[in-house]
Length: 100
Image 1: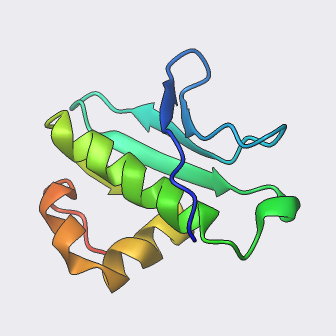
Image 2: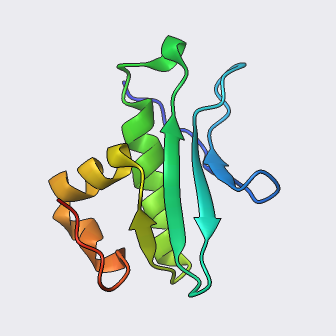
């Protein structure tokens, strides 16, 4: 059964994160001058690799951003690939951004 992790927006470190035992998978971000959230880097500790943690982190991060009414710029290749595979998230991608 898949674990359901709680998303934390660590505004001090500018990252969305899960706390799983002593591990902290994360997505780093910056907010640009237009108020868009640029997701720059995703990191999942090796001990958690292959368990769907990164995918759940991206899903919950995109959900949080969308619920807050922001647009996303997926600079991180992992996030961009996820959005490409799940086109329902294209609605929160900032205008003028193309995902290849």
